[in-house]
Amino acid sequence: MNEGWVRGRSLVGHVNILDNLPLEEVAEKVGTALGLTFYEDPIGAYDEFTAFLANGAGMEFELIDVRTAPPQDDRPTCFQFVASSTHDIDSLHDLPGHAIELSNFYTEIIRARTSLQCQSGEVPNAA
Image (cartoon, rainbow, N blue to C red; front, top):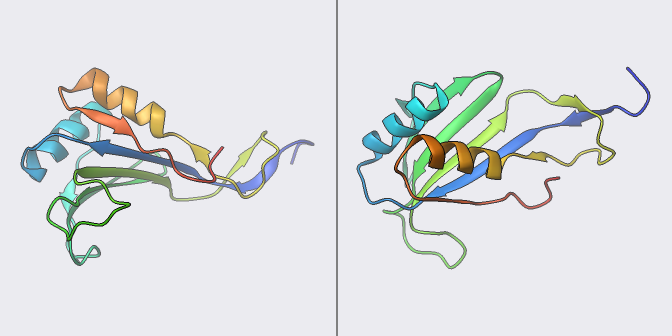
């Protein structure tokens, strides 16, 4: 490994989608914008939420409908798009163990390629 490279960082992104549409429609729009095919979570990993999942380019993507869950002070009432790398990556950054933040990146792509209203939900402790 080259000097200066740090092993073990992940990519993360979180976008709050504020539209009041069916989850299936949001999944199709986000999937088209990102070149992904979302499918309904077959095992119900999110007990109280309906979710759609997709994979691509070494990333896992989740689109979670948290609108129907009991309200909590720290959770927005919207759809939550979550992206995370499936493997740790090498990085030139000097913050070992911190994730590389992609929330703004995904927010801008979804905004530019869809009519969905969204806001970045930056992930704490990410660089």
